[in-house]
Image (cartoon, rainbow, N blue to C red; front, side, top):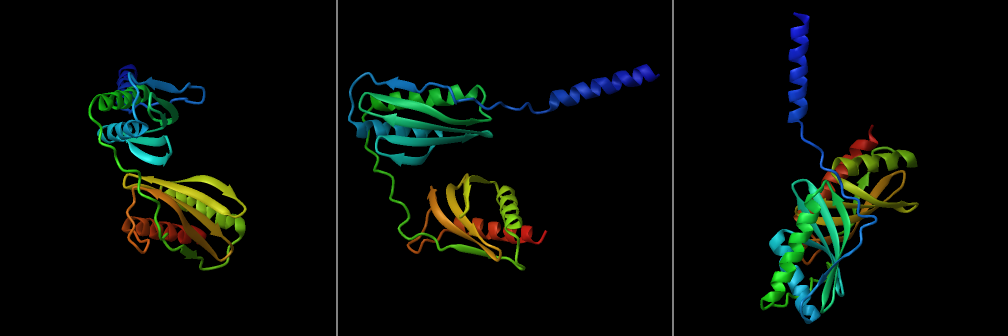
Length: 239
């Protein structure tokens, strides 16, 4: 009887493990060489840029940053996050991997699809896409979280870290003057700087991607994220 029961338990354990979702590994890009996409003929760099933008849009990539002859692109797909640096000229596109979280074998497939779409776009007549719009002319006003009681500096720092983590913010850097944090949301990316003392924390807008602000520097999404962050900061200073 005991032996039969143990067999049943073992089978159930195996079935339970088999049903669990396997973790998808990250891809180590620290030693990866840049990929060079050689173009079959010379193009105007503006045409190459337009082909890259068109390929990104068709494959679900978004531009995270853009500089002359360079675009940083991001793909968020099925729990994976991929970021690549695309440097282009009239005869080539150089693709350098920056991030591949939860990507596994999908990294090669998704980057390869992007390269293929760029090549295909350049075979057709390419309409030059206007340059990215300039940054927000009027930045959002700083947001303040005033504490109910004075806090010790270490306690404030812990409260900020907890609040950011609770709302999926990522800390990019810390120094004596405060914290720079980034929120990578499906509706856009935003970066803020948080300065703090014993009485309050002040959240200042740094930059953003894909967020729409009106002439007064207001955005419904940004203001909602700030309210959530302020509530969490204040809540964590009461612990």
